[in-house]
Image 1 (cartoon, rainbow, N blue to C red):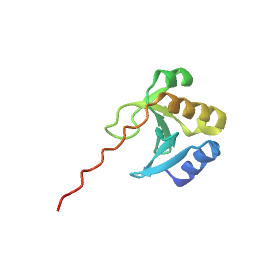
Image 2: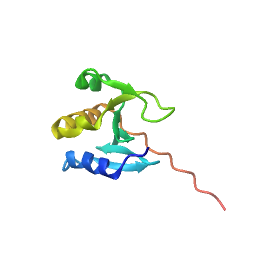
Image 3: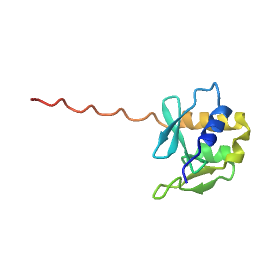
Length: 112
């Protein structure tokens, strides 16, 4: 089941004005902040990487893979998104502790 547009709209409304965006990826969404992918939304559920800082913030996080074949992530159900400040705390924590993406290598120019 793909994530609904309503779910993404609600998620982004909770974080409005904080520079958080979502990009559609294969029927699901990547969540971006500060130029980094900080979370995934799959099947209307938020997933973040398993970082010690995230575990401390979440308390006793539930683990589950966001999609078949993926490594387990921390699962945050939609009912936890009601508190926009709490949600922002999690997203900003992930932004702080995740590395910047590696720059993409340029393809060499073809001769001919």
